[in-house]
Length: 213
Image 1 (cartoon, rainbow, N blue to C red):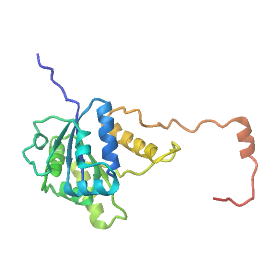
Image 2: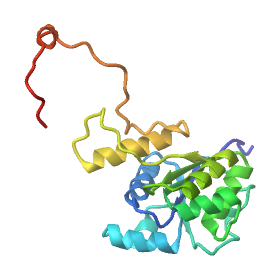
Image 3: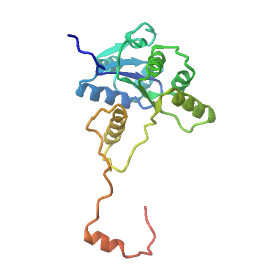
Image 4: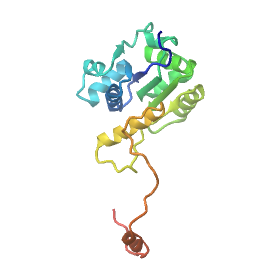
């Protein structure tokens, strides 16, 4: 008998905002986790890939199990009957946020995102823009009200990262947490450890010396 249930498929969208390294790392991690990845990249996303990395569009597509042309509105991921775990847009431009918020699906990426929302599947938007004006904030609110999750890739420093790769991995791991996927990339916070006795003694001494950075 054919087994029913949610297949381990994840849609990955790449738009033209800066931060395409998140998509590259995400696709590699999904492959390691044996989660089938379905990739769609906008034309500005391909341009940003060329600006920010030495990875070609062909190489990026090779990281995914399945890839689609941005204009292929008839692709599998454009239908709600094609079951997935959801979608991550990494990075997500403000234009893409605006289309998703207004249900204006002009390409396969925003159509696939709209499908995730209408089917009540998780949609995570790694929004990359700063500073933000009122129009940006309204678009983000609109997408959130429709069911999307805004996830600006803000680096975390409590894990004391030693490299750019550490920062990227932590962010990718936290995004996958939203799908209850354990990636092994997150150094999880479990509270501030008790300092050794000598450190406690030193901390009790008040110093009036100026702090230097």
